[in-house]
Length: 186
Image (cartoon, rainbow, N blue to C red; front, side, top):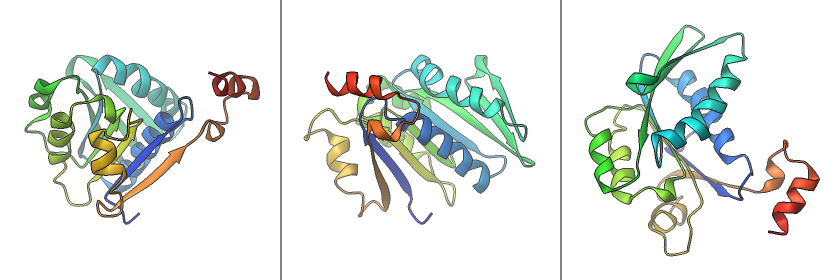
């Protein structure tokens, strides 16, 4: 509650993306009304497939939530308990991607697979979160101990005032023991 960010890393198929994206939506809807947020991935296509589709399918099944997508404009809106917020989608595939998110003011940011995005994009996205009470949500798997995100965020969670959560396959209740065992042997 008192942290300015939340970082999740861990095993593949551990439920990081779904848990973090759902937490991000519930936090943003509880904390704000009529505000802009961003959900970012390496590409907009991957954000739609890995985050937006599962998230909006799940949210649409709740009686007290309404989700409206505007695919052509790159956002979706969530209405819950008389509050309505807009979630813009951005892809951070290369150094030039930072210019795509420039200029927008955000109350929060969720970066899916942060380690796959260039540092310049991530830093530009973070700089957009200037609304009082805004928070940063990161989901990642840094590929090596010298990765910039590992060194600048995961190793410095305390000084960044961020909550760090490490996920394992056992955190995903939808995986059968047979599937978990198959992943363990790979």
